[in-house]
Length: 393
Image (cartoon, rainbow, N blue to C red; front, side, top):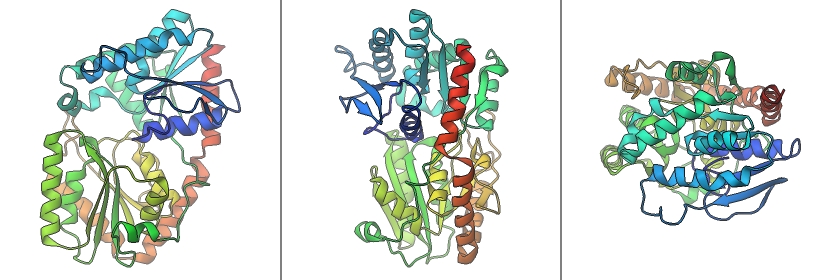
């Protein structure tokens, strides 16, 4: 069960569910229950049912709409042997479905509500509902799959009532046959990107956890010939949009080569952007693993990223890129204790990689090999099925 599923994917959790479904479908009888408008009923052999927001809740708080959708799913779970949910959006459907039908509920942790307090800006009181739903589901789940060792530590810290033996690590993955280095530059020309300039690229949503304001402030410290390409989804809140747009305006007023591409790009375009970038930037303050870093690595691009969450399990400092240490406030927001130092350190790491194109190329090639060797979806499917078997035994 999942909120995101093709063609409606906007984050790493959606990518994870789509890819995991693709490799699990040939190995087990799989039915996907997904939020949203009607979509194809078959996905690589998995049957798919879609669920719109129930009538009467169209104007309700987003968290209420989610819980209403969860309830609509329950009857369709009859006859299943095991329920697997992704993110808090589907967790309550899994929890209640497990109780209703007497089957194990396994959940995958892609993020944690206690570590995303900025969501209160979006959901208001709905954030308290989402936090309750997540905590309730975690407390009773038969198993919890963490996408990194860092995420496992966060789960046990946020939810000490969860038995440690129930929390298993199964990393996110990448299809390195699909995500490959691209020589074509047609998409760059179409979006106004100069393939001949040293380039820092960012791809992601504009949300507090992604740290976009820190990247924009760091970019202002880079050499003037460096091009900055932002492939950015919509901001979570008007306040964050105003902050980010103000920083973009300041950056564009002080230098050229600042390219902003709004909205979600087709995968083919993203691969070209990543492949032709000198370095991919991931300034996140919270990142359970960071599939986007794997995507950049699979495209043969060096990565500069914050050393938070599961990122150090993906990016090898000095080998596939650079990790930037980040001392964070203890209030759950992920805010740097010293913002100026983090911005300066991130800028310095970017400048270091940009200054040596040969080294950046070697890092990119090492990153692709690491993605191939350690993050294949077939191995992740094997480990997921092992978790299923352990709770069904």
